[in-house]
Image (cartoon, rainbow, N blue to C red; front, side, top):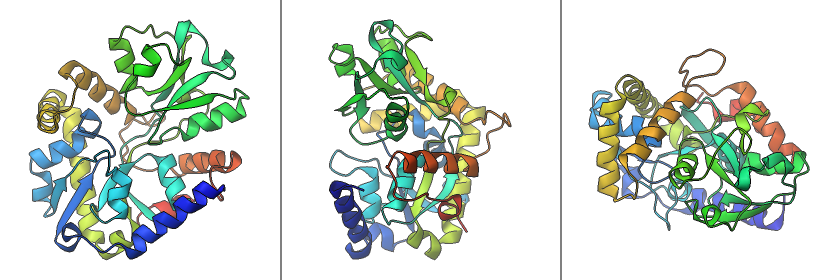
Length: 319
């Protein structure tokens, strides 16, 4: 582990051990912070709140989105929220860094990450290419793939959109199949089987979004945590059966947060997010963390020196 990462580990540990609880943590409310701004990626939680599922479960929930100065994980570390969504690879890094987490609900059953190349090039033939990667993380598997396939990509950080790629400043860019992929399509970029590399089809089908809590909080509030998880699951099940109504609810959150998007984009996102929730093998929406995917992700990240040790399934699950 390099010096920069060791410093991050120290900071994370201090955040949990020294920052006092805020008023939100002291009362009975679970403040839930999704890892990104308001969009259909989080439809199930919006529906659970709007339809009263949290209230019916006897748990008070307040959804607060992250800000540029207060990203989701920082809010969790500072006790400004009690639950957040994380991709599995992110959770592994955080646990490896000394911050115990608990996965209380898994929504993603498949990996959504893709590489889209310019000029209809095959991403696997672009050695040394300049590839866009999110500045807030999410690209662990892409880094593993670049090393293992001897591609030696030069990763260029971007904040939240595809402008650098569209402007021609990059040879390729990472994208989520439910988000930036459709931004590229709407921008007029040609996407084909030749210039789109889907990680889930090349041995990297590692689960992404799940709901996580600090283990210290979970152990003190197990019943409340599980009621929150079950109501959130109920929200997602409702979304799957009533996508049009769910989209109406999503757009209310989008408008309230003043997010620059449109209904067509959010409809495409919701359809893809729901597809990714269906396990490829069982063909069911399972809402569970798969031990084999935890092992696969942990092994890949250790192999490529992104973790000091393998983080196990048992370390992540609610006990």
